[in-house]
Length: 249
Length: 155
Image (tube, rainbow over all chains, first blue to last red; front, side, top):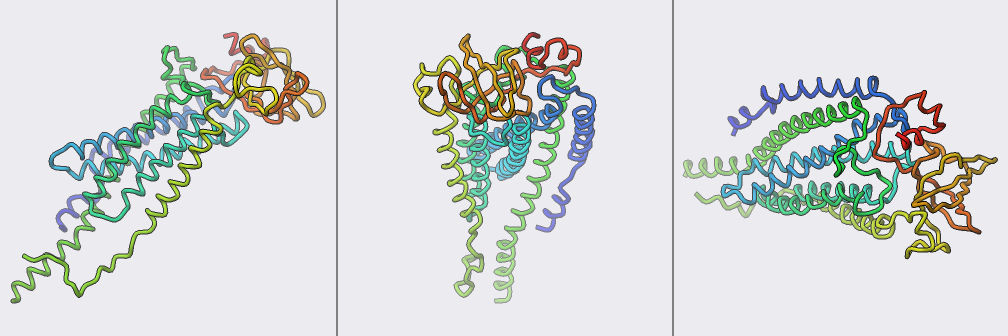
């Protein structure tokens, strides 16, 4: 057991250090470009700068939840039921919830500046809030009592159901009348109406946030492994105690 | 090897209440959100041309109406803001009590909350509906057209 702990701690590797350093560089560019180099929007003025955080964080939250569903499905389908899939699913959901919270907070600030209100019960905001609450529920399910196999099975089912909400959130602005604007980059006709530097900074944000997501998930799933290992130490201690009893008899 | 727990060693693990409480809160939160969705979000607003025509957009009820603020129609008199709101070639006069503030301006889409009274829409709340277009602020272009949103609409 101690060998496992020594092998898996610290959680960093050369790969995570490279990803971490690259994400710092990309995010530094996003901050400089987003705050200083990109122009004000003709209508929104300075508040458009919120977009460089809001949009990438929303996309990465979607990505995280889809990754959670894929990892959960892999756990359910695989014959060995490798717990690595479950840990990746849980780590990705945790990071996804964090990015979803950033999306809601930045969107709320932008809404106050543009709409005049922090919150509106419009289709996009309402479905996003529901998605956020659903994944908090997913994280709560992961912490219910039971073995790690029970945890994995329960949460995998929840994850595969919860991911179905993402198309509803994304297309809510098309399906219903929404105060939230429609898609700019992912619009169906492919005509992106955005200033070039704004668009480049937005994509830089997506790249930077993706790297941060990967870095966080890698570290988090390794800390989850350590927690599982620590929880199993009770069983190991019982085996050692029984062996000691038997040899004493 | 017999690994069954010793009967004399009762489990000392307390029940985990936090996830159960959290799940209960999530359930309540989910119900609140779904309720809000059914009562508010599905039909967030009526368009100007649907007032008195579409079901749920009756003139006698409090409405949320979407339209574009017509160019050269914006007037501020005392504490009131007057403008014409248009959608699909149908227009209504809007009187808003106060200054909408924010990015409210001519040629921009808005959702006004209020009632139709004697042919005028009396609003006490206005939300600006931003388009999915983003362009660089250009001082010269704004001066020549009078409104940033109008310059964007004109390309």
